Length: 274
Image 1 (cartoon, rainbow, N blue to C red):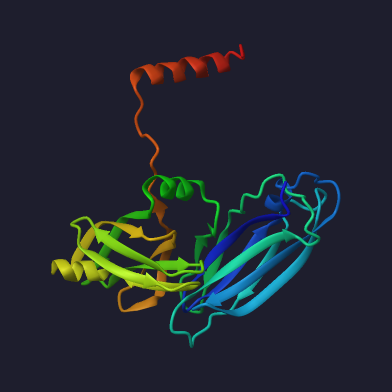
Image 2 (cartoon, one colour; image 1 turned 45 degrees about the vertical axis):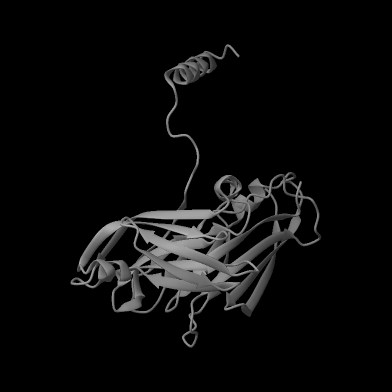
């Protein structure tokens, strides 16, 4: 039992307002006792270059009787005079620190980014801690590896892409971005900060106008990374904002004997013999 859910990290790119809407049914689903009223504290910090610029919180009363479609929203206006982008960190806890949650898995939802005369887009959140794939990866290979396989940079058509790195932890992270020809760029992300790397640098390294390929990111500690597509000359004209995928170490093939055991097991379960 837990009195908290895993903290969430949400990107806050420059040039956009963001609306973060919590689905209350996901909070209720994680509660052991859904019948009694419980006070939940949702705290949100807007962090930029190690400083908390805005701190908001709400206390909500939840139980199984409320409308399952009900949500709770936080809205943040864009901040124009910052050198680097920011990020949001959300904590969801029992106000009285009672052990009310049967598990502490973080919520999963999309935030809405908007700005006047710009395309509105969605992006998902990330767990600050507790991601099983990342924990397993670092335990096995002792470093963090992320990847994105659909890079499309076109200098002639003004199509750009940028990696958005969030380091919500207390120490700096050094990471190396490699393309499919092993060209690489090194970037340092200070503690509790955001840094970006435009990917047209790889097209310029190859001396070509149009580059399609993939990248891998190697880092000294976990990072939360997003890739976004934008107008080449203006990173604040965004068309798409997607998370990257951690490298997984699970087996992708099985032997014929193991496959046969799986098939037989699934067949027996379908007959409800066991």
